[in-house]
Image 1: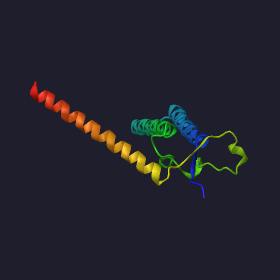
Image 2: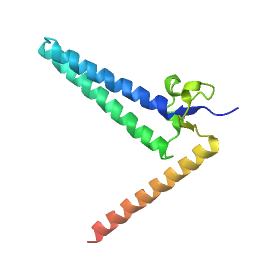
Image 3: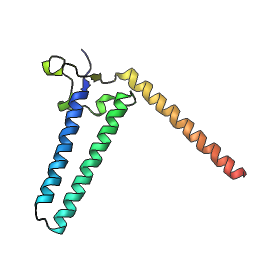
Length: 129
């Protein structure tokens, strides 16, 4: 049985739908006579939505570069379905297996240990100077 996979097209379409929602919210906000409190809530909602979209795009970038398991982004709406005709030309990135996940965690641990050593070395230099 093959592992689930992330559809890049599906993920991009989710992001586009979220952006369209923010656009519609902004248009509604502009056309309505909102109270000051409602304007503040709408502005916070717009900002929060854009922040979530930005982070989703960053996560997608990390998945595409092989730094993050596609499972972190996988939902029903962006799952790759090889039996669908509409998926022609789509790029599907399979979720990681146990071996790949362990390798990634080892790399992250090694990177964190190097950063910690670098910080200790800097502290020693500052203390000596």
